[in-house]
Image (tube, rainbow, N blue to C red):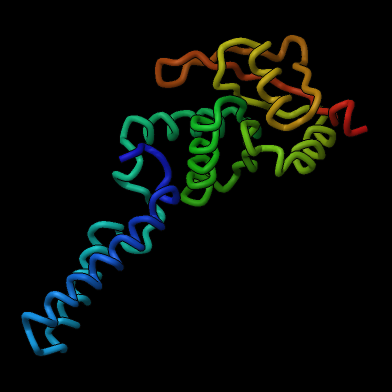
Length: 195
């Protein structure tokens, strides 16, 4: 299975299990004329599927996200929180799991954490909020999962549809999970086409 969020295949699993359960009940009702027994089998199969296969209503994503990826997201989220970075810049599949992990860490045990936002594909949904945050604090602390300032500026600007500039002297290299990343302060302004 993919090493990504359950939402991409949860609907398929639920529909598939419902169809499988229906077929199982139909077959059982033909073999066993007692419909109460067939209904009992259905309830048992659905309960096992829900609580064992899908882990019930748990917010923790256990093995549905591959362990190496989960560890990476946790390490990067901790680094972002420790350095008070509020913006994560990089690839969609790396940034969003880290954003969600940072929020999970905040929910669990870090009450002083600032909100963390993503500057990756689909990050433009929160663009106005991120722009306000950048203006109010005269820049926003960012952790870029890429290894060059130009790539960080370009990726962040494209993702948020803004003009992004890095404050001189604010760039610092950090290594997380044996990967080089950049910690920096960035200024955001609406793109020229939005003014």
